[in-house]
Image (cartoon, rainbow, N blue to C red; front, side):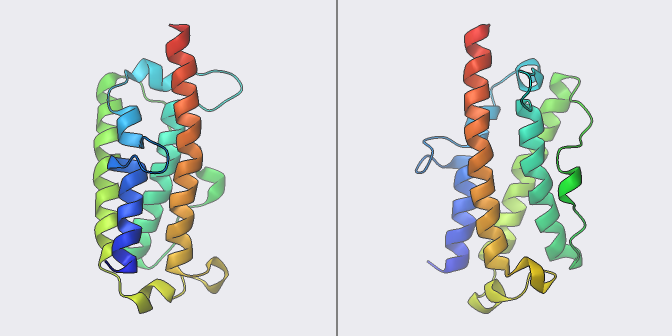
Length: 157
């Protein structure tokens, strides 16, 4: 298995289907919860839907680099999303989250070793490899928050 295939599989694990590192993944945690649970806030923390949208924001942003060669996302906007207002909106978001993740994984697994070491848009951001690894680690960090929030909310119901 190539390094690119390994990276794509690691991203799939944290978002779509893995259990090796955290014994869960975003899809497992989010797919069967009601939008009201996903949007319930436990002050002062972000809610589950905001954390999921935050991770999706970066997945979309990295995918855009493959399409346009431009990094158009900014950290300062990475938590700014319109509120989810219905079950239908929640399900639409999740469908897009899963689809965009799979699209990005497809792009990653088709990269050569040389492409992985190329600069990611600008030298200051490091390589594609560094950014993909960072995305995976970032996703696990927030997955832990999602798991804890979900447990807290479900326990209070």
